[in-house]
Amino acid sequence: MAGSYVGMNAMLHTIEVAGVVAFACSGFIEARRKRMDPVGVFTVAFITAFGGGTLRDLLLDRRPLFWVENQEYPILIFLLALIATPLFRHLRHAVTESAIEWADALGLGLFSVTGTSLALELDMPAFVCAMMGVITGIFGGVLRDVICNEIPMVFRRGQLYATCAFTGCWVYLGMTYLQFNDAVALLAGIISTFALRMLAVKFDLKLPA
Image 1: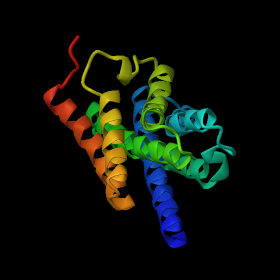
Image 2 (image 1 turned 120 degrees about the horizontal axis):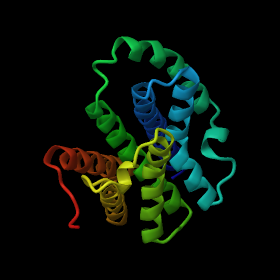
Image 3 (image 1 turned 120 degrees about the vertical axis):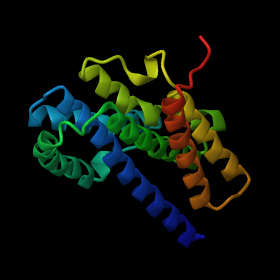
Image 4 (image 1 turned 90 degrees about the horizontal axis):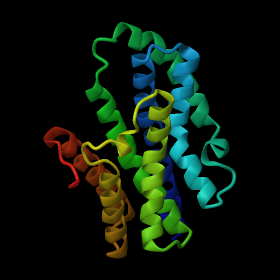
């Protein structure tokens, strides 16, 4: 039982790191598109990577905040910012809206499911767990877009966004309720969110007005 708990925590930690990197990359790309200097690039990436998780921790009264407890996270973003600035300067023609959408969709899936899982560990009701997942997944991107003077993706009348996170969270919760293996449930939630978001982009799927 203890081994299973340790293994679950290790998996969540790995997914959290992947989510931080994915959202940071979307922040790097958007900051470079706005021709920000290295300080701006780091700031946008930092806020994008940690905004959703910070709000989640505050709402769940978790202390210390996840990026304070794991100081390697902000250090990683700082190092990536140093690399990303000259790299994107040479690859500026390859940095497109599509690149942001892929990085953002991956971060959305990774963070939404981890947010749901952490709320579930605290014995929150299922709907609250799902909403915590959605908040974790979308809030960093909201802050990124506001800082970059864009209408946040989640508020645009465009393709499905928060709905994708909400659906992925319920896939994870459903599989957990049915007692699937933790790893399988986590991966199913992440893949569902990511796949639905990319399908929404490709086929312009929208909610009815």
